[in-house]
Length: 338
Image (cartoon, rainbow, N blue to C red; front, side, top):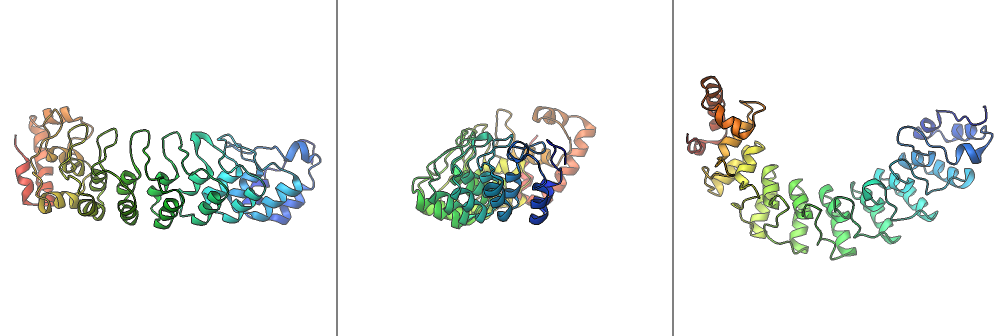
């Protein structure tokens, strides 16, 4: 092998766990200090340590760190360290080894994500516990204002949520940069068991609003998570007619996202007024639902309103509305007031 050249097969050998062959090839490298220890590969600029940590190759990771002498704090172009990779991909043995080797527990990659935040994107309680026991700061936030608890609320593992609350009882009291709480996030993603824990152990205000005026109940309804919506009504005394910053109610938001069951729930069970109007244009839920059914693709709301008075467009619209009325029941007939 010529000096200064390294086989392109090294990352593949690590990925496939071919330790013996990798070791044999590495031993052929004439200048380990210059060529191997700081070499970056591919578009992301990963080192061999990154590949080993990402694929959970503990034997290779140990060999590269201890025999080859690679620095466990090497970063790629996203400022990820091997610890980020091991934590995010769910390799507890690699995480433990890197921490034992002195890896910085709260190192930051681009967008200010720590290994603990990365671990919370998966159901990695063992890794999360290991990082916390090594001093990880649970209250750090990324560039969007999310801490690890907020991220875990999106993933929806009740065990992780319980552990984080035990480790830091006040961790729930956090908002993102746009004022969304973990309760918003859990409701939006339909994480029923997590929502139960948040309502039992935390002190979120009913109808807490983000910067757009959206409440957790709205998030649940517009994404079709009726079990979460019912729980919020029963345990959190939310207002099902609350309005967001544009004046939309949960009814309108459910119509926008074509949540038929949610519409039935709101209109039939909660007796929400199907003709309630929203925004400065005084649109009903049916306007939003008709737009969602795509009768006039690509039109804005004002264009949609104007198009209703064009014969050809109106005929197409009426066909879709007949289908819609069949989907949301006879209560929907009261929507259409022209």
